[in-house]
Image (tube, rainbow, N blue to C red):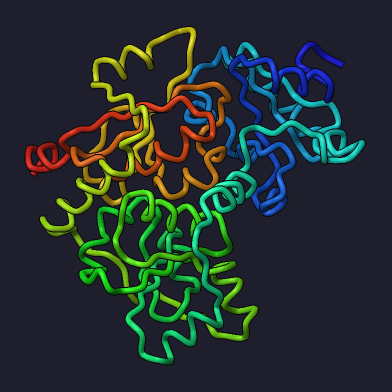
Length: 362
């Protein structure tokens, strides 16, 4: 055993001591799936050296590598220690050792998406509609629209027929263009539950006048009911109109009216990032296409809708500050902040005039 080796008891203590900590599951993506017992950030071993600085910006942060019990974490920790990672560790025995004794009482990286969202649903009594009920509304010619809040890549692989692909953080910005009538019934969908529930509750919290519900079990519920999915990017959003932007501004302010939002400028963000005692993430919650056209130095493209359900895939350091970067309208950052703050993250918002940057670069 080396000084870089820690046991399950030590990791359990570290997870609860309130100090910064990164736990990285270095198994292949297909082995991790949706069952990471640590709710750790998955960064496969072959990508560690190339991408670790992105996930753990400060090399002095306690970082624990976890493998499948095959010794890969010990080897990786040795390599990283040689290139400047001063507080790199690995879990003895990996995931098999972590699972010993049962999983029920294990500490987790953050509040997992499903339990958190289930609590939101129970407390807020978020309206729900079944696949059979939705199909009946369609068949009867009712005015109803389905908004699929997953990434557009997921949407393309299979969605409820007629659904429009609108990643979760885009809901307010795109809503007025997609749903011009307040009489339209709005159903929010995803693959299962978390993103659909948060999407529906976001619209409700923002004061949308339409009737809103989430599709029970999303596309899984649809296929389990015996219905076929549609594939391809059949319908999605376009550049928002001025009316859509006005709508998003108004309802974004309603959404965050009771949120204690912290707005910062670039100078403050730069000071935080340079802080040797604290980790700060600069996460751009706009679309990947917008990020490609213009973004702030040091920022990371991190679609807001994904942050809502699986934040630990982007935010690897427990206890870090999170700065959400958005355009001057800020509706996407408001949505993400509305929910992540409730999950215990320290959140700040940085708005920037990216349109001006694009014009200057043209």
